[in-house]
Length: 418
Image 1: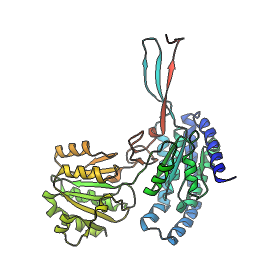
Image 2 (image 1 turned 180 degrees about the horizontal axis):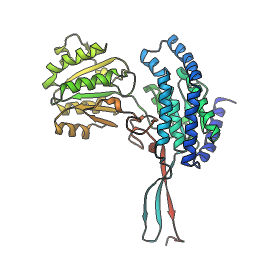
Image 3 (image 1 turned 120 degrees about the vertical axis):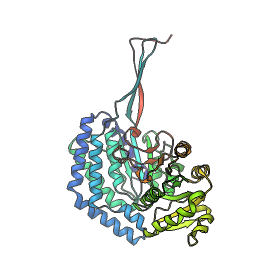
Image 4 (image 1 turned 90 degrees about the horizontal axis):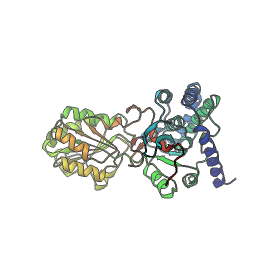
């Protein structure tokens, strides 16, 4: 069987499984998820052994410290996966929800009902916990899922998927409702995203190259988890101590993730006093700093920033600092150079806060808070399947509702159209 036939067979199995999944009750799905959590807990030693193989290979391949951090599977992160499953169990099942209903003059009752999407392909890189997060959200919403992780996490992903499959099977998970692509051949991605009529949606999570490869070849709908070129603007009215704390958290707490801040815009009215304090704070954390001409006039040993820097997602302890003349310039810069992921303002002026949150065209916009909160769990959505930077049909952290669609059910009493 060649790769095309192999992927076609996998998709066909997923279609059959999706029909069985759509029939499961909320109680049954929750029982399956609880069993998955228990199985992960039982297998934590084997999960860490599989991850050690990936970590050794990653170090030998010269992966960056940030990438290795994303790849690492610790007891704490296994605990996080287990907690994520149990958090999702506690959430309301959106499937079957009556979104709205109305009665027509002819007596027809029209009901808009939330239903599963069907077969969802998740294509991702590096982070093994995505295997669990994606699977449990798809299971809770009655979808079948096909997982294609990156080669750098192959052993970890297989071990996690096997635990979920075995745990779920004992409690009634339909066969092939959760499948993982075992090959590292990139052609498998092309095959997967061209299976219109079988795969209903693709969700890529990873770097710019992966996103581009998926969208260029796809014949099915794609929701992009795109890069996080995140900005924080420090307004002239800002509480500067608050701004320092927020920026430090957003950059340093975990620099290799998509909601970490990459660039700071400082209003010129406070730049001379604020930028030296900012540089001192971040250098204490070993952050490599780049600055535009105005920022370097204040702190002369900043690395000169290039035009390309303002469009760059570093995913590392690196950050750009730029001085802007006013709020509107900051908004314009963010809308042009940001990735519409997560952007923030630090200000006390209510007008500045209102204008920023209304005019910045991003999936998540913060007023006086760290961008690091862009996360399904932090939003109270449980685990997430990604942060969509698209506008249709999902935007921001994708939880349960975003993995459903809807259909209309029309109840009649014999009406015919005249």
